[in-house]
Length: 568
Image (cartoon, rainbow, N blue to C red):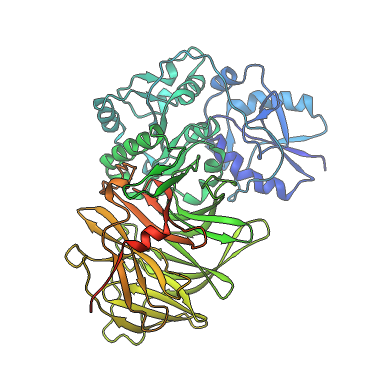
């Protein structure tokens, strides 16, 4: 049989069709080839095609061929009708077929260059571009609040542009419309998306076009949106891409807050030089260029220093390798741990262990602590193996898991694995790694200068010092503002607290972010600590206001000098 060429449309649902067909075609390399638009040595999706075809004028031609419709499981449009005779002449030995929908996608590793369409700049520059797509065949994916969103954004002094086709868009009052471009609506969409600050839209062709143009994207998922099929679009976008929480679909004010937060993040520059804290610490920021990252923890591995952090939505964990100055040396990757947050990593018996808080409800009001063994593969990939999900604690009569069970601080002592469950009283849990069972080992109380300031909450995993005692951190929350201190406890059971900071080492004013998403107070949340007594340095790592990953270096001798004894 001759090779068969599968033609993929460029406009409308082009991204969907490419993603759907790659896996099928790759599984039949001797029979099928994918064709999509090429301009010079650039193509639509660099990993999605192995044969290309040139257009005389890519953008205007595509505009004139706009539109994709579904008939009996196949896509038929004017793009296909126009391209077919050209392909037949170019590849006479091949049979040309229209695409059939396959239910899986896969991004191949075929070489290529990403196509960045260029058009004449005929429309005004706007702050926010929206894609108010209206579907007649599936109205459950239509969001009806685009007019309200546009009105509110404009009341804030933001200019708004609309992309897509006029006949398939929900009507809004905007500052610019793609179909006003002299070369058509596709050219107008490219023009607006190329120069705006952020794109807000649903899962549609315009979201794919924004990904191709590396336009910062805020995706509004419908209740029937398949999040598993957003991966290729997200990877294609080399700028910023994050998905709003599901409840935003029912509250346009939440979308407004998301847009404000996104613009704030895009317009605020992460300091490239260290920042000095109130007590003389040196704060450095991790700049993850293509996504927001926060609440990171650091660990030494055989592949270098790894940073595990929460993603832009705060709903899953990612990781990246960094140098000592917190500069990325690789691109981030997904851990595959969804709804897990606030990672804490320790080394125990020559292995790395990862503790997370798992939120199984979308509102985040329920959480449990989970433990995994963590291994780094030869290519730097993070491999985790489940050890335990702690819903019960043995040897603790009357224990009932709290709604938000989190901030357990793991540590290793005499070959055994432990958690500090709480600071006041200082409860210690011992974990049997073979059975995944946690048991209350001991509990001791104390009094300190912090007694009247609120609950002392745990932060970083304890680290053993040369004197055989452990050093760890805690935080106190006051009206949403976080203050962080250190404390020292015994290196043997019953692990009594010995000393505590007489004043904070991190103050609320040390926070540098201003995330409108959470509307929280001034917060630096610590999740990890690295100790180097030879260099007289202690490094804390965590999140700055749910926006950034930060590492703060302190002079260890000054930290210890600030510790005062507790009383019984």
